[in-house]
Length: 168
Image (cartoon, rainbow, N blue to C red; front, top):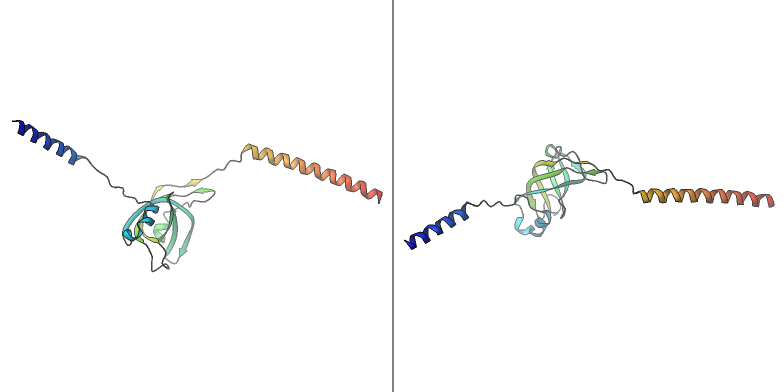
């Protein structure tokens, strides 16, 4: 009976451990992609990050740069897929957060040996938006003081110049 109870406990514990769901991370960081370039060469990858810079059209395809916070990489996309991206990150804009699936090439023969991804699909995870930059009040006050000092300097210079002219 004791052996039966031990066996039953082992079976229950194993059943519990086997029923736990384990999720693999679908997205790979760009830094990890670069570090494991030899292993991941010509494999299907999914990256997630902000579309940055400018879209660079080349015929029916376009280059899009993606930055995930660890690094950035160029993605070669069909124009129809790239058209899904509306905002690109810059000083004034937060770019669309995109999830791109495609084939990673460590040294792409088509693009002069550069590491890139030939994207197959683009999914917009979060739309971009404009960024409002506030000017700190200390800078506004400093600029005002400098303008007043410049005006006073100009007035003093003009008065001294007129005064010297009368003596000549």
